[in-house]
Image 1 (cartoon, rainbow, N blue to C red):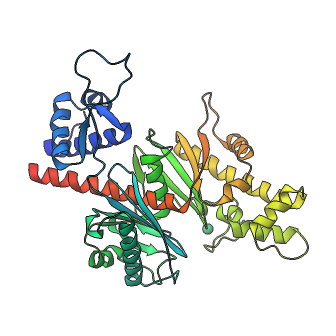
Image 2 (cartoon, rainbow, N blue to C red):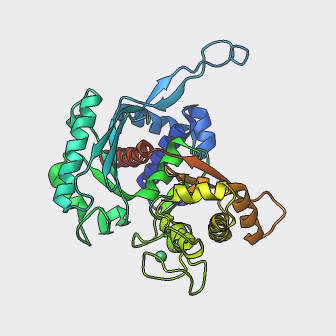
Length: 402
Ligand SMILES: [Zn+2]
């Protein structure tokens, strides 16, 4: 064990670790938790009984295959108590709010798609719209909004999540908003605000391809290019909420003009607008206004259209190689609801990426694509709320113990 200053502090770390181990495993016996977390079996027993009292976990008798089951009493395992603390997730997009309510085990209870009238609102308007959307969602789930233990909200933009502070978001009509304060006035439970790419990373960690990984990276291509970084099981946010801006990683000196005002950003080569801009610069005739048309031209063998996608693929591969060279993750997940990844030849992108990667004689970082619908963003927001509930219950335990 690491040397920690205080026994109770050590206990707190142990509680979080053990809860995480149970969530990861689905169901797991106490003795296996001890092995997994390297916390002593006696401490595991003490902590798991605390967590059971709080209602976060419960005992089950696993159905082991008959031939494996030992004679006598079957081994008792622990699992997350699903009906304990339902939470809600909200993904704020330009035209919609996607919402979802999940139980504490992450099982979906209801989801809802709410139409926004205004893409850019005052903080108070945004809170009211979220309230209306969640009232409808909780009705679908057959519960009261007051049954919800925490709400996770995903916003595009530059978010300082630990402070619930928005430096800038396209959904708000002003900069520098203490959104936590606004939400506190409207909702009775904790509201956790997070950058939307980090929500995807959280959902992949709890329910998706990152489930058994400690170090992985999620890259999203939606309107912009986003990134979520998981290091040692935690989301890495930088110090001011402006980290992981993969879209503005530079891939070309004095290159193409980006929406951010700078030149040579990755987004200025792989974003929708960038592909169309490039296509219209090289292909004569009526200006192209949508990517699908350009994609169809490429598919039917137009060499200029193909060249546009090829160049975007090469730039994207260079960006990916930079990520691998800096972070050396176990896995990179290309996630998102839009078809942007479809337009890039993933096999070719991976080949090109490897050509730019530091070469060693072990298997390179794996890259996979994971297509997501809007409701999965909301699930990510809910996942973040689950984490928030777990953290606050663990804090309560620590407080009661001291
Ligand atoms: Zn940029």
